[in-house]
Image 1 (tube, rainbow, N blue to C red):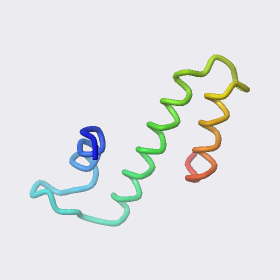
Image 2: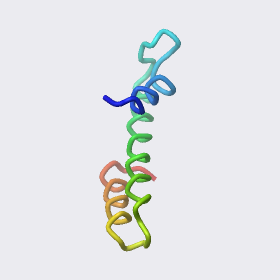
Image 3: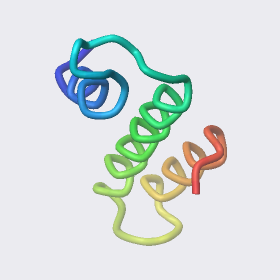
Length: 66
């Protein structure tokens, strides 16, 4: 697991003791990871129909994020 995932868990998925607090926090972390993947794909995108945009849209559809 890389540092960014650990940061997301610390910021959104655990209380001050580091224990998980609720399943909705796990869902939030998964959504944030999906958004970051979409951002990475779009970062290499120059048009709405190029490969970066297509990949970002596939990630969005696969994970059901808005």
